[in-house]
Image (cartoon, rainbow, N blue to C red; front, side, top):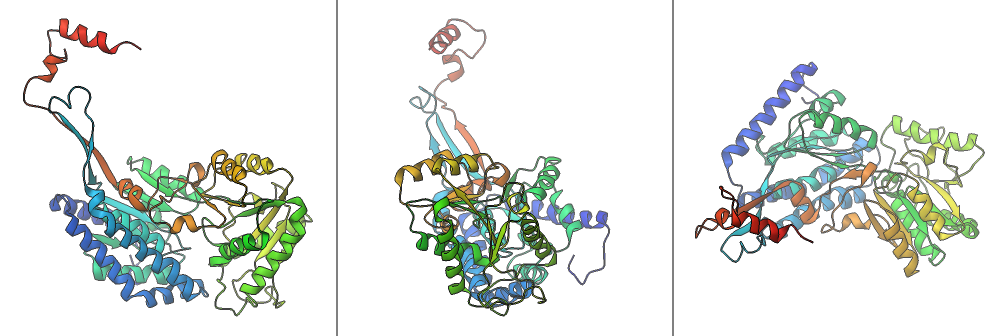
Length: 486
């Protein structure tokens, strides 16, 4: 199913995918218990190909995006993946240990034992997105391999050169029965999502996730969904505006805002609006004196998404909203063939503006003003729960209210996106922004089955002692009386 292969029918694709899945499942069953040494070896092999092919990975991503900075490719996709793998290696043996749990009184005193054993689920399907096409493969893969599973990977067709490179280097390091990459377009993706995996993880848009979940439901496949949403960023009156906006715009402009946890819209005190606009312009101009030919400013991935983002701006202008592109060099984006869009502020859009209805996933930043800090919390809570939420300020009471009264997949205080870099913190969404999590021990547990194991004493018949053994008599009544009470 590579680009060089002849076109196949949907039935042919599904047949091939099922054959690959069945082969992995049979290999998994034949292997038996997956030792720590085997898991460590698989993690080491994943680590090795990332290190050896780091520059090729960066070049492939840059080619797919047309312009994506090497430094970003290396720091986010390559180094981020390596960090996850090393974290799993460091903690693997401890995570694999069974967990003792207390047995019901008095069974523990009589010699009975309870524990949880974490065992692999089997074969996990990974459907990866285009925005971080390597990190969103290897970061969940680190948890999947640490948990002892096999994996089938479907990269995005929007980044074909990266997808083909992933297929090559993973085939170099892994037997197809361990880990394999399936390339192809939407038809392959649709067939892939319908497979009877033991678990599936999808990273992408909420609208697509509904179809993924529906397809998985037909085979009762458990799913982890890492989606997105409109992540709010609130600047308190107690915040240092210059410091806050430097951090916010650094995150917003990273990958041209094409990040699921990018700051989606900004809420600022109404009296600070003019200063916020001025500082935001200054901060972006310092980071990007030019844009069109600047190799450090990322392009929008393709024409479809460029048109979508341009449509948001056209809609805002048609509503008479103040639209402020940050374009210090006064470059002409309209006549350029570049897929770049300058960082652009949209001031006080209403909820019916397109830029406030859909996840931005681009370098456009709506700025909304507020009077009372409670208004920010009410506004956030009146909208679907986001993947991330950000608070900037030094007011401890406000911070506590923000964190406890709003619900989001994750949160940062006085910065954006850094919570995902903490590999011991679970990463995932809530409600429309996703379900389940990976990273750290939570990732290990996501891709493991927590099997409850109870070992009964052989010293005497516990059922008889507890009144469970027929014919029921005094022992049963005594047990009932002892438990059916307040």
